[in-house]
Length: 448
Image (tube, rainbow, N blue to C red; front, side):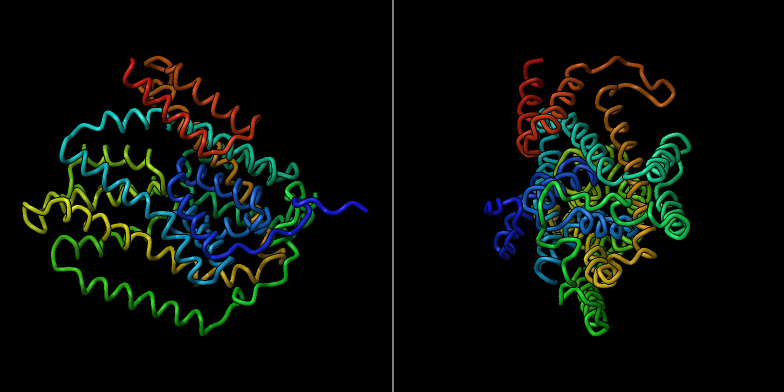
């Protein structure tokens, strides 16, 4: 009898150190918004390392999709918690955003101090078309594994039409998909079983550490004592942070970004008008033009798009000279740190408090059927996001009134196609693809 190959064996449990360095790496390469970031995690955690199975990955993702806040970062917290308890979740979620905080703070300083980011823009000009390819690849990959029957295909198509043509807000699409999934689980249970009635979708990768049939993890069991302690600790941390902050700009930021974190249903784009209204109109921390520039930086740096709040915090504290005119850099970094801390604190609470309940529903059709419906809807939403990014990159001067005006950026279109082929056909690592595209964009910026 032949000995099993490594891909047929269940992988060893990663050490805390190994997981730490993976989450740190992810923080530096998490380009492409939530779809691209989730694609990166799927490729590494489900396909390569096999720390978690396809179905358990999607089960966790579906919970994150219905929460306010950045779903990719919440998914990192969830998987980190599954692997290494509460501290594993805290480390995973922190490292997911920490590199972005430092990178965005440095770029914001260059932006405010020198007003010239040609080098940075050149790099990002190459990354943007790579992001288009990553998101298209994510839509294809999630769809190929999640849409196992005609009913789920129809739900994906309806969600695409709803968001693309009818402009229905994302939270309503998620709610409708969940309700349809719950109804479908009763009327057509075979269509809404985990895997859509076609077996385990991760069988091509081999057994996973946290697999579909893995017994419940002891620390993942729901306990009221854990929930109460966690919520009280989070409230104490929030209260202590608010008390430490001096009255004025930083205290206002703590209060404002806490509110913003609780209304981010539908992703960063849904909350940006709220941040704009508060940061530009009410508190006047920055101008409308600066807000647009900050969004451009946020879209082209690693980490969640909602990290644009760190730009708002940096500019607001810098503009108000909270530590005096000789400490602008320190003021800016303090503002960025405050905005980031208060924006992301609720995500840790939502996941660490709710994940034990979600884990207890694994395999229970009345809970998993709505989430299966949400997964199908997400495919349509990701496809819409891919078209949105592609349109902005390939037709940068077009408007909604004239969607194909201003000419085609053939160079960036070719980069997108080449990046997609590298990911799809040649199975290249996403980090290598991003690096190559960044180098091409930089060279093109200085030559043309």
